Length: 156
Image (cartoon, rainbow, N blue to C red; front, side, top):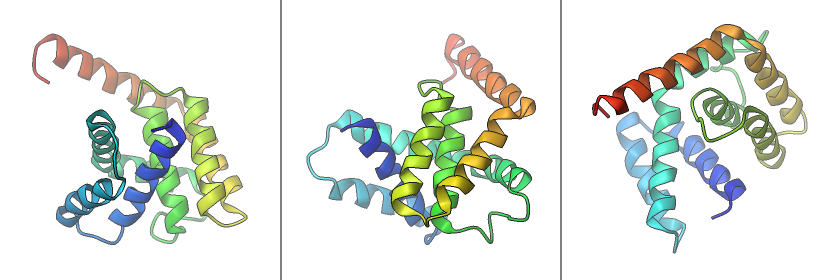
């Protein structure tokens, strides 16, 4: 599965999660993955890992979105925009395998396909503001140090 297709699937899973309880979301994600057909176990595992990662950091990510989206909050925002932002910010801040500029570009590309005419500029603006925020960058570094320490100590 190509990386762009992979991200689109995560985006769709996140969008579906908006309409289910947290308990139902895991089951719905598994059902969605089953509809993808013949994909590798590694891809399935990675889809679940990234999906669950975004959801695990949802409150923190939404806080940053609310802080940066002047005049908007996550409750009033277009659902597609919100999902693209959550995925983009997750990749920017918490996914060490994805370069920040790639995460931003991919989120804008996804929302160009699934959002409104104004969505790409809106998403890009918020992602750029998040990218410039030093305290968010510190959070990113702290999270990685904690994860590396836990791995080194065998506490994954």
